[in-house]
Image 1: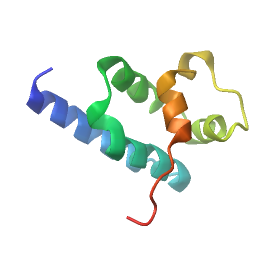
Image 2: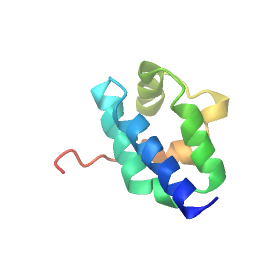
Image 3: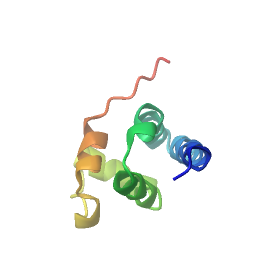
Image 4: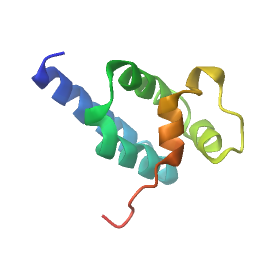
Length: 90
């Protein structure tokens, strides 16, 4: 991927992650995207984009363990996301 293309894709991912409408998920996904989007490999990037297609309440339930994570999202990327602690004071 070209650098300009990747930069635009990262910018879109960060925006989509941080402005979803469910504040808790905005903080987790948006914070994770800001902190790690540039270092994601293509597979992880695609996995993150696919996750963004899911409903916020489902994502929150999977992260908190209230509901089991579906097999397609039970990945190393999702484990990193679950371990991520957003810095809400920045």
